[in-house]
Image 1 (cartoon, rainbow, N blue to C red):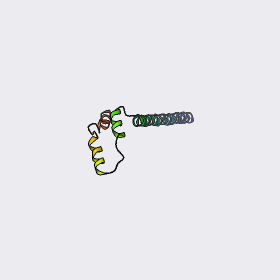
Image 2: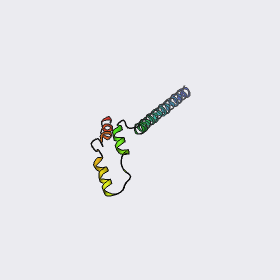
Image 3: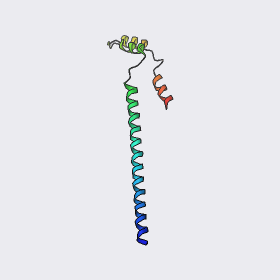
Image 4: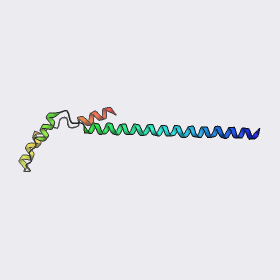
Length: 94
């Protein structure tokens, strides 16, 4: 009788250990999938072109001159009003 109880106990213990290992593996697998999705979202967020074409046109219209007057004219023509708009929208998402 003693021998029968110990074999049943070891079988139950083995089943519990295997179940814990499987659940742990599923947990880490799900975590890895979630991290990959977050990375993909981050990549697509930064790779999408800007929808504000007026800002893109302003950036492309900067002169290649490096004298002080040209640099000052480019600086005065640059609009800094919405410079941190993307950062603010990302902060709101978090």
